[in-house]
Image (cartoon, rainbow, N blue to C red):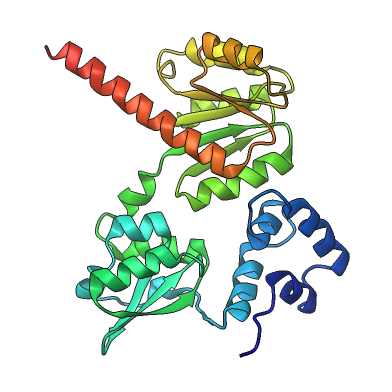
Length: 286
């Protein structure tokens, strides 16, 4: 059995990145918990198309594009619920003789593939596509697909470092959130009032406006006062965390902010916000 080539070597062989760039990316990857392909994309070194092409070679998968223009019967779409398709970025392509062909953005999402195999009783045949192509197919072919896409929670991410925003933006997209990015406090405030995000993550030290002044400005807006805000800071100190929570931030995250930790805090923040909403609704309706 031949060994599978690593994605970094494939990108070098294709002339997409240099060997020196690969060395730097591997150094940045150590301790990050990120896959190399996702890290390269988030750093702006490669595009999603280039990553998907390399993954197709790495895993010996069929690479498909622009399949939203094809026709897909309802009984095929029913095999993969819209919620699963949206959350896991998969789309059913064809069912034939006990095999279900699906397009997926992540060829390593074995839990989803095992779930679909158990749910349908069919063998899963995997093809790979970009998240953009999969979302376009979901939007066009699933009843309510447009609403499902529009229903993605919007998260405003404000940090002066493009490396940090790129790093976390990919993780947010992978979790089916809709990221909105700003690099200073004033720009972030404008985007907050324009997009009305479901949650905000801001840095402590931002140009033009620090995290605390930003929070006060958001809380002063009548339509934004209940939006949960998470503070990130380059120092981990109990005093700073206590100050942040006292000021009204829902959580404090010390940098470097690992995506797994950030995603966990986001989910907890949404859970707390929903519990608060239900409690207030119960009090009002008593």
